[in-house]
Length: 346
Image (spheres, rainbow, N blue to C red):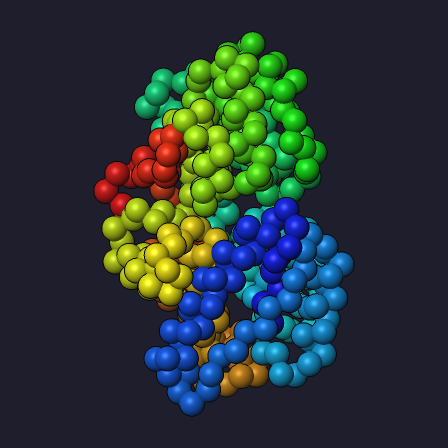
């Protein structure tokens, strides 16, 4: 069972993740990777509801035909699911869901590295620009974004020698940033960390620029996937750390990109698609290692795969416990398209 946000404000993540999963499943079955067994994925739409996600988890546990779960990207949903899955020994592989309370035991895995593990590339970038001051604007309704704003960025500031002038949390569904944008622009920090959802990013950046802010803008992965297209030239120069870039030259990443484009009519994959792809292949490798479809055997198989790591859409995947790590990249927006900023040779 794949529990994803297929409707609502975060549907862009669920839809793209599911595309990556479908590509992986197609490859797994075409290659007879699991021998005579075909991998089948049933998608359940959890929207923005932690209650629905938990309910689907309970349904999957009760139905022996489900061997594992590919979990949602929303931390609140994942945190509601994990204790149920762990107690019932149902393997769950999450994408995104980067806050605490998600990985609660040996049956819960995550194939999106926590942003804090690769956010240092943003600090390196700001150091190269001699930035000394910064402001933080974050979505306080989403745990991952709130954690970045409250913990990760202050840690980055301490490590790289810049000070935080202001830190402002906004509601989950906020779309008007006029007041806070004016306040930040007037203070004129060297950089602004804009840690918001995909639809919020172009609005916040546009309002910052309209208020006269001319400094650096640093976001996160939600600025990718074409989410800055509506801002156009106004958002030029914005950068964001990430775990995936469609401009990468890593062999396993390039192979994924070409296969994705072939399946989806030339569409360029984003990080969500890459993570979904890696999640499905991680599951398949766990099943293959187990030689069984029993949940406990799959868990043992996943543990063995995690120890060894594997190459996927995100490049070389290594695990710290049940949590993946990859080499970070810094992407950016040049006013019309996404570009790779650091490392230039990835």
